[in-house]
Every structure is written in C-alpha cells, then in structure tokens.
Image (cartoon, rainbow, N blue to C red; front, top):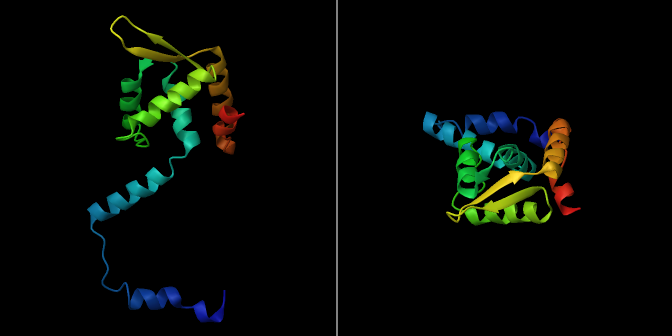
Length: 134
C-alpha cells in the first residue's frame, strides 16, 4: 500500500465517521440489500428448477420464490413468464393448460437432468445460463 494511504481508515474513523451510527433498522436494510445483490441469475434459475419438480402455476412459482427471499421478479412477473417460456422452448419444462385456463409448468426428463447436473456443480459456481444459451 502506498505511504500516502496508510492511516486513511483511522483518520476517516476519527473525523468523517466519528459520529456516524447505524440503527438496527438501517443495518437490517443494508444486509438485506447486500443479500439481494448476491442473487445471481444462476441461483435464481436453480431455485426455479427445484420448484418445478412439482407442477406449479406461474403465480405459485412467484410466491414460492418470494418465500425463498428471491425478489428478482418482484413487481416484474413478466420476466418470470419470459424465463418460463424460454425454458419451455429449450424443452427443459412442459407447460399444460387446464380447463380453468391456468397454465401449469413442470420439469421434464431433460429438465431433471439439468437440475441434477446443476446441483452437483453449484458448489463450483457452475453457470446454468451457459446451458440455456448453448
């Protein structure tokens, strides 16, 4: 580190940030925001594939993702349906309409293989996006 930067942290702590204090509410929101940013596309896609092991509607998927603290589709449900459509086009999931005009989605054999492969390789930061784009 350069000599001119030594002691910068201590100087800032003693001057600029001397009276700065975070309330618990602020700390909570900061931590939550940091966690949101750690929601990678791969993590979201993995969660979605895991949820699709059983038949679900898009609305049920959005609720389940929200329950897992994944807020990528919060107030942007159209992106979820776009992703579902893309997965359906790539033949990883199947969609089926009911008489009540609800569409249910579920993994097919190709999607289950993708999920198994992704779960095995998640620890090594395996990129699911590459499989979808390829």
